[in-house]
Length: 371
Ligand code: IPM
Ligand code: MG
Figure 1: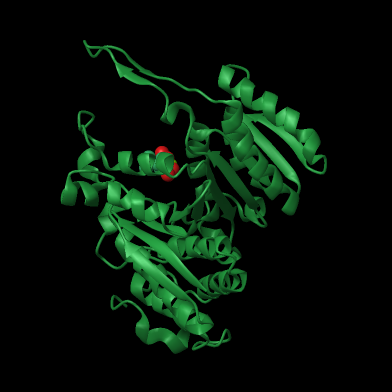
Figure 2 (figure 1 turned 30 degrees about the vertical axis):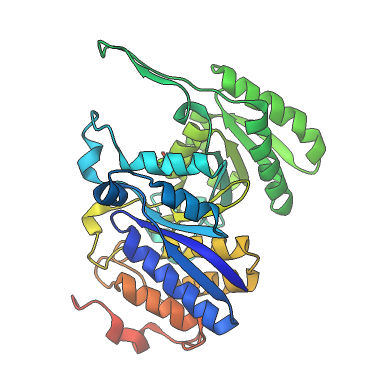
């Protein structure tokens, strides 16, 4: 199979984790006889430094013509504490989402028994947690009218949603629930917001088309509590842009490591795959970042291309590395492996060079030099 993949390495640790995913894709291409052609493009602080623009037109063009997009991370501290900055890295990502109409952001939250001890929640609360958040990504307050008064003493961010925007993502969420545990929870603030009442109205109306799916409604404040109190109750969570941004970060800590969580942003044409961990500038260039979030995003990318066997193999390799303690510093600050070593081990597993039964002691030499 021949596929064109646009690669945006982005900022901070983006380049080094994305590089491990490219290695995994190249290994799979060799093993299964595929051809992946990678086209690199710029976005974020990296793009501002090189071109003055957080999203050059060329990047949009390359992404529109690709079968999938692999993205690393965005953001740089030099912009975070400067509210007056006219150009910001995040503008690039928001514009890309809008230009490619990536209206649905999927964030699966799965726990790994080997990492239970890292979770802030008790093991009995997290064992078997497996849900996915469908966050609307191209509407709401993120993209509403914005204004600051000439005197600078008031500002507006408008929140708008339309029937079409709600229904297209709700269909995807319902269909996913049908393939999973058949439960959908709409998270909103319908006791206060008009837009939330619109979401409820259309989701309620659609429920009869998906009669095998049980639909629940939760106010976002209660949902924030429930995600921590009893995360096992969820299967598919559907929500608008801003609430989804907040609760997906909250949900990500359940697993014990932010570094492991993948995401997919699906649109009408192309789709983009990125780890949810952000640019983590303090770790950039040190070869210590966790590449598994990017590698698991690559598994989602492979599924999107209908390469399901390959996707399963990548997931198996990740499970194998976690179970055997082949982990980066965020997971084990003492006995850790480097970003590039984890990438190499995943490639060796995927290509069959490492039998699943091999144990940590046989790979000791590739460990960090600190010990
Ligand atoms: C995310 C991020 C982005 C968002 C930022 C970087 C603009 O937090 O993907 O969740 O708010 O959507
Ligand atoms: Mg976020």
